[in-house]
Image 1 (cartoon, rainbow, N blue to C red):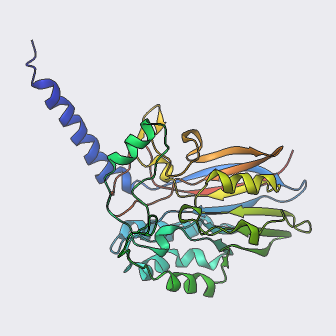
Image 2 (image 1 turned 45 degrees about the horizontal axis):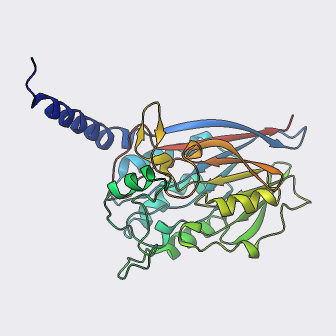
Image 3 (image 1 turned 60 degrees about the vertical axis):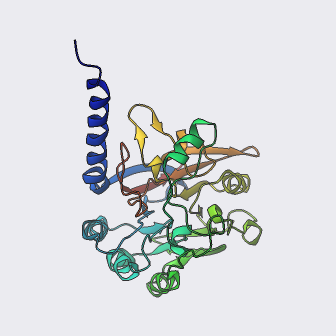
Length: 313
């Protein structure tokens, strides 16, 4: 008979092996996902959008920087950055260097809480407990100002903004913008981060641009109030990030937390959202980074997504 102490020892060994895998391998196992979405007018040529999100750059993350630089070989028609680029106030130059080759392409961006504020170390078990009690929870990527924490580190987001703007990327912070790509007029409506209540939908309400071939909605955190507003106004596609795909998932089950009020079944990838008799496609990127205090991923590899928009049937 196996000694009784062998059971907890076996559980501990399994846990240690999973931790070593998630922190030593999977968190650096970058991948590209490909998704096709039918939202273009009939007869339009496909449009390839590279979505990057939740980079959470920490100074010295060379492998992540090289991978981001390598994505330029995809030669996308458009790059959309859905925020949380930083997890280190010293990492702005390395973030801009990593994204430099992608800034040669047309682009648009919004910021997340971690672009504005440095992360705060928190007990990850709090979020698991919140999920199991019926609250989808907040993950440890919260910016320091989420609950008004005194002494929150101010990230030099202005430098990040200036770098993106100088490359010609559209700043979609509670505003609208337009780009012409190939023969398509693309209109954008963006919001600042709902996670720290910087979104101001009344400043951008009114729905898609009638003269555009396609109107895209862009936001960092996919909170339901924002998804409802975009969908009710008739946007065909919403792009978001923030969730990290759950970051630590259970194989064959999925995410335990979403870091917002969206349901876990839509924590990453392509889904639909319905509101006020309308339906929108929603794509949530699982992102390619982690908070510097929880540098692990399990059953949820870091990613970027190449979205190929094609004509509606």
